[in-house]
Length: 113
Image: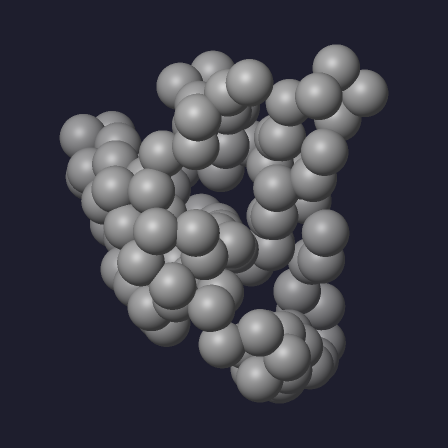
């Protein structure tokens, strides 16, 4: 049985990792302190927003998987989707990082957890 890191500690670690790589991270919405689900929005220089959330894998682990991409022609739809998810589950943590290589960054987070 694996023990889960409390959500607020994991969020802090993700933000520090982004800053250590020259990026920027912020909490858009705080969720349940210990067991809240973490939704991660990545951007590169403020563009190409992509939403990642943890999904169960066949080996029993939980990895961040891309679940939604921002449509550059309709950026409002992405924001509305995030707001809808937050209304559905107020325990969700919503964090955003602006980092040069978002896919590599997400892979690093998965390797740490």
